[in-house]
Length: 172
Image 1 (spheres, rainbow, N blue to C red):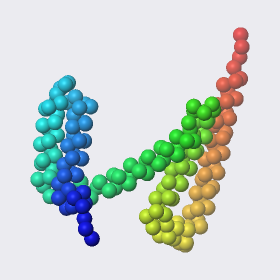
Image 2 (image 1 turned 180 degrees about the horizontal axis):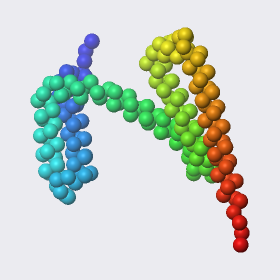
Image 3 (image 1 turned 90 degrees about the vertical axis):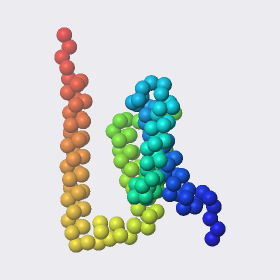
Image 4 (image 1 turned 60 degrees about the horizontal axis):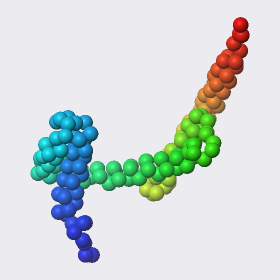
C-alpha cells in the first residue's frame, strides 16, 4: 500500500508532535502574557525550543503520538454532545427550557453518547454482560432503581416546598 507524506513515519513522529506542542505553547504564552505583553517573538522562540526539545526525545514524542488519537476522539465526542445539547437548549427559538429540564436532557444526551461510543468501539457485548448477566446485577439494579425513586421523591418535595414557602409571605 502506497503511503503519502502525511502518513509517513517522519511526519507522524516529528512534524505533527512539533507543530502541536509549538502551537499549544505559543497560544498559552500569548493568552497568559507570561513573558510580557506584545512579546510574540519571545513567545515564538520559547514555543520553538520546547517543540524541538519534545522531538529530541523519542519517549516524549511517543507519548504525544499515542495520546493524540484519544484527544481527537474526545474532542469529537464533546463536539457532538455540545451540538445535540445546543439543539435542545437553544433559547432563540422563542421558548426557554426550565433549568431542571436542561439538566435532565443533558444527562440523557450524555448517557446516549456514552452508549453510542461503547457501541462504536465494539464493546457493547462486554459492557452488557458485565451489567446485566452477572449474578449480582439483579440486586444492584433493584437498589439503583429504589435509590432513584427515593432521590426523585426528595427532589420533588424539596422543589415544591421552596415554591410554597416563597409564596406564603405576609403582607403589611
